[in-house]
Image 1 (cartoon, protein in one colour):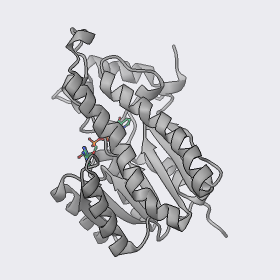
Image 2 (image 1 turned 135 degrees about the vertical axis):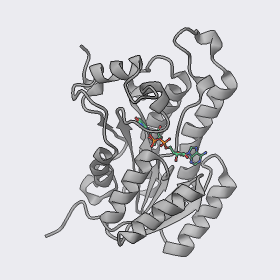
Image 3 (image 1 turned 180 degrees about the horizontal axis):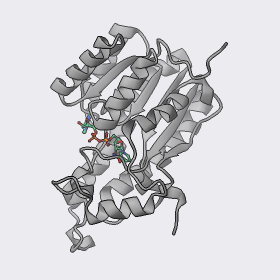
Image 4 (image 1 turned 120 degrees about the horizontal axis):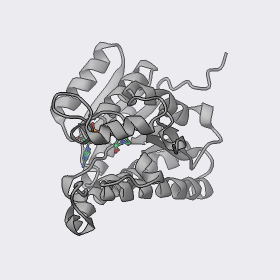
Length: 270
Ligand SMILES: NC(=O)c1ccc[n+]([C@@H]2O[C@H](COP(=O)([O-])OP(=O)(O)OC[C@H]3O[C@@H](n4cnc5c(N)ncnc54)[C@H](O)[C@@H]3O)[C@@H](O)[C@H]2O)c1
């Protein structure tokens, strides 16, 4: 019987693959038979992840990258094509925040550091646009491919404090819709562009904001739990099914969407 969700032998590139969410997704996709290319800045972490995947019988390659550096991404593209000859899917998971792009509880908009605001835009938004430009090329030749961008709850309704991150993620949702139409009209329906909007998952980028050193929730962490009908944070593994759906034939007529994976956070008002 045909498995609509089959991703065996597909070459999947994950930027920020060394992060907490990226790692869980990479392990799952490799388990499903995909060839996983982990792109990240931390060589030690990336090589260890590729080794873990291989030890479990999967196929993986780690390459160091910087999603804001076009020359480095072009080199990554050559290396990936030399190793696997094609790219079937791109997951733009690299992202993060910086203290100066946020406003402290006692601060105001006047405290926002515009240089750091711009760096957060560059990492998250330009860091999605640039890899898209570079890794889309083989997809255009193949007339087939799937891109999944990483948006956020902050894109739907800006959360307090994280001004730069929210603006960048809203830009990513908008760019996702733009690109869906752009590639379908110019290169055909074989290339699809969607986004995933995770709710709250405890990872390195938000640990200090949501938890105290002893592991208990900060006031903001408690606010998140109160606002989430499931009453808990997400587990990284809970993103894997949606990602697999978006890069497989199961979503063949789906493009330009933002898939929410949030335990009900976005649906809940009071
Ligand atoms: N954790 C959450 O609750 C949550 C919610 C919504 C969206 N997201 C998004 O999910 C994605 C994955 O984040 P995560 O939670 O796993 O965080 P993480 O900090 O664990 O992972 C982010 C990864 O991006 C990498 N990275 C940072 N700058 C880079 C650069 N210039 N070039 C290449 N890689 C770079 C980091 O090294 C890290 O491996 C991010 O885009 C994040 O914004 C996370």
